Length: 106
Image 1 (cartoon, rainbow, N blue to C red):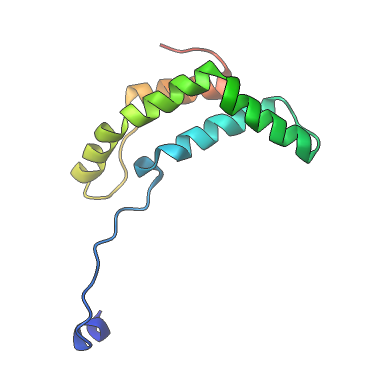
Image 2 (image 1 turned 90 degrees about the vertical axis):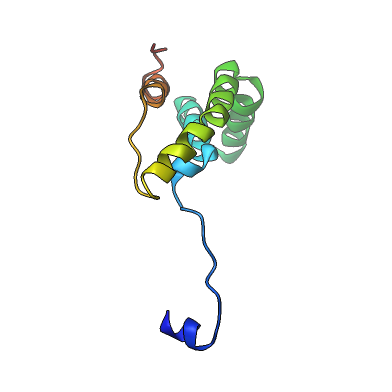
């Protein structure tokens, strides 16, 4: 830091690096669970399973929409926590339960 000040180099504010700030992390986990339930053995099977989950799974579509809609709430929680960890809300916990078990919760 001192070096930057001595050289008169301004620091940039960087956003937090957290899965809480990135909805795609949740979506990737959902796709991963769905794909590995199909137990692909070869690369073409893996690609087909990913494409099938992405293009044809209405539950995945709903989860994408929910993840996007949760971003304002997540960002507010991250700001309130001053960039620290946030507690999982009830709806996120239910979503994760549903993904891991295949049982629709709530």
